[in-house]
Image (cartoon, rainbow, N blue to C red; front, top):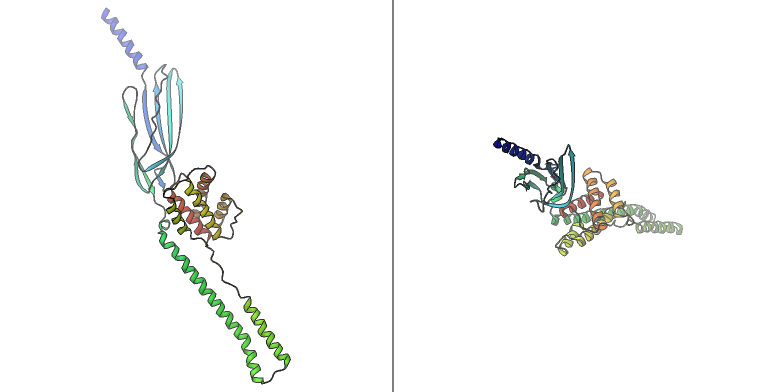
Length: 321
């Protein structure tokens, strides 16, 4: 009889212990498994805890400090708890905004978490593909300035041809007058006056000949960026401020539709209207966010410099077409 009572008490204690227990799971997922270089993606880590009757203690997620192949630019978290008939459920979620460091295939590793009972819970590894930028954005910088002398040579050749045509026209006007005067052998003072007037008129025409049109691109953007990178080995806040100022001067020199009185946001909106391709218009929107972050939020952009520089060159090339 005493043994039966002891077994009954032991069974009640086991039921009570089980009712105080809890189940736990941890998951990780991304908003997309394929991302372009220079863009961001979100990694969401979720911890779900099922609490026993009357239990209110929960475990927090440990923060992730680094992920191979990615920079963590921002982190935000949230938590919710609910109880139904004395049984609770807690959900903790942390969102990491990631920027890839380079193109290629990367694996976000599994993250492990140990609960209060010593049990370990882990997420699954996640495969991420980072697409490289278009091939034309990787054109070597030392090849870009070569187009400037070639364009100036073409303009000089066009000017020479225009002057040659003008000289032939003047010769066609003056030659008949000289031939007629030599054949007649004599000419009246009035005819001489008319001939001199014709020559003076021809000289006036020559005086107003159009001059050479200055090149549209007065700033060698690629060479100036290379010089700026030599002055600033690290892309800090001061570097980006000078870089965006250089971009503004290059854009003004490249198009007469832009004005110095425009703000950077107005200039990029106007440039987006001028661009014929969706790629250039999207580059205008991305660069506007980078400039706002640097000039108004007073901190460096979240994107990699190579992606920012590629967008800036696309915009300058588009508005010069």
